[in-house]
Length: 93
Image (tube, rainbow, N blue to C red; front, side, top):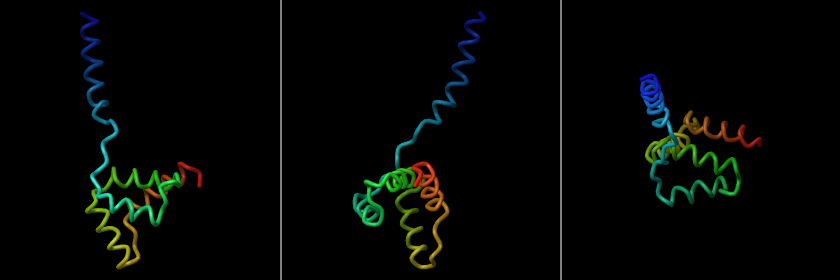
């Protein structure tokens, strides 16, 4: 009986952990990637990391709205700044 209860406890703890797995990136049109690559080449590890982070954290519509606000006001969306900062720190550049 103890083994059975231990197994149930392990399964109960594992279910929420499994749900925390790496989610799929949001869909972005290929043209968005090309535009991003013009400013920040895919070969650069910081750029590649930033793209991956942005596509996981923001929808294409959110990203486009953030870029439009940046071009209009000069203020960058905090999610974009955070992604770039984390990737810069991670890749030591």
